[in-house]
Amino acid sequence: MRIDRPRARLLLPLLCLAVLPALPARAHPPRASDFEVFASGLDGPEGLAFTRDGYLVVGSITGAIERFAPDGSSTTLATVPDRLAGVTVLSDGRVLATSVVSGQVWVVTAQGDASVFAAGIAGPNFVVETIREGRLLVSASNGNAIVDITDGVPEVVIPDVEFPNGLAIRESGGRRYLYVAMTLASAVVRYRMFDDGSFGER
Image (cartoon, rainbow, N blue to C red; front, side, top):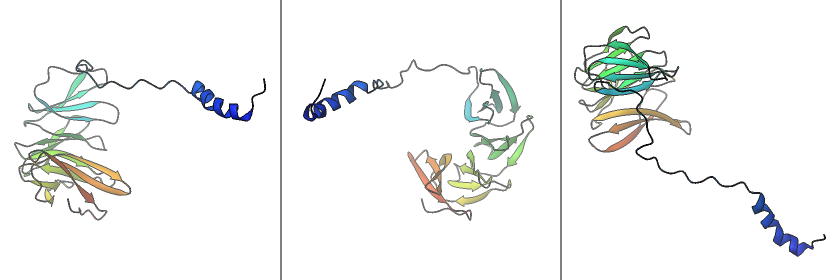
């Protein structure tokens, strides 16, 4: 059958529509039933962090640090005489756990050996590690500051931060930023991180 050009121009969009794949249905927002209990029976779980091999490390207010396999089975990595808050798994596999109450940061090896890594911090709450330099920064909630504890000796690097809590580092467009959750101020702020170790304005 011969189709003249004007009719072909009209039929072409219809043919294209006919071969388009069906569009996926819009995803529904999660419902309260869309979850499962991964672990139970924990006494005051606080910090959460994953190891490189997929284990979940959980700290608690009892001082117990549990390690969960992907199937939900668990072992106690270590128990320290402290109420724990934030937990961070370092790039070398060690675990850092903070204690707001005692002002200490604990370090636990993969074998479960625990010791105090840094002390004398005003309410250490969370630790983050810079991947490039292996620098360790902790939020000192009661001291309203960000503290460097890389060498185990606390040094304030950012003062005047209202009750800093959670920390995260992100690189965007060749720039690095330290994000800080200021819990009592109901805000998240960020600071530019420079290669010389200094920080920019909030």
